Length: 98
Image (cartoon, rainbow, N blue to C red; front, side, top):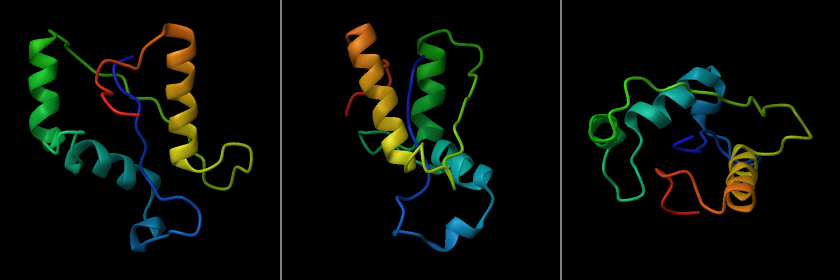
């Protein structure tokens, strides 16, 4: 695993994008988002892929909309990062902030 992130807004903070399909939010977060340093992912991720000799990325996601057990997208991402810290002793290498 190289990165954990989320797209979407916590409950009560809905936007016009909330009405769009889930893939739009995820696509937007990956393609148009920025990394923790403010560099567009469309620039930083291709560099990282080349620098680390990564040929492909597998993307996995949880759909949390309407699932009372899962919580907000941010809560799910935070839980995954906490699991990484407790089980591996570190964050995924592309997550520099938590």
